[in-house]
Image 1 (cartoon, rainbow, N blue to C red):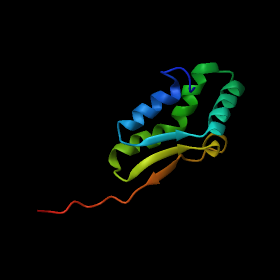
Image 2 (image 1 turned 90 degrees about the horizontal axis):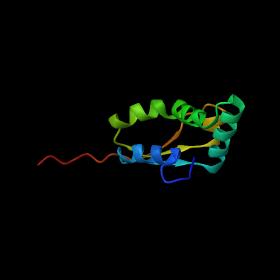
Image 3 (image 1 turned 45 degrees about the vertical axis):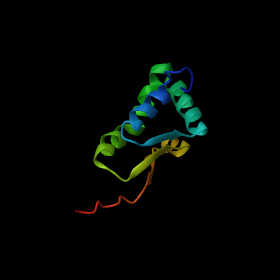
Image 4 (image 1 turned 135 degrees about the vertical axis):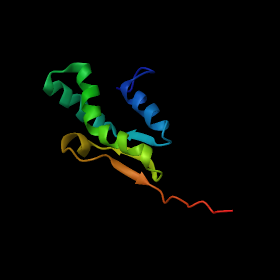
Length: 97
């Protein structure tokens, strides 16, 4: 998921970069994703499905939010179904001229 150049995690990081958001996936989360795919018996294709299950909602939400700077996938997101962590920043209001 992290190797080679076009690895699955890197593809998602690029998608998030389009929204000026950094995506981080904990090493333990990567291991949990792989273990989940093995348990499902889905192999490499299952990795994408597992990631999509966790990130679909936030990917639809991001374009309408200016305050999110980072999305973090933790092991709890994979094992317990928790939502990804959002690192936000207060949006500065533009001064009117």
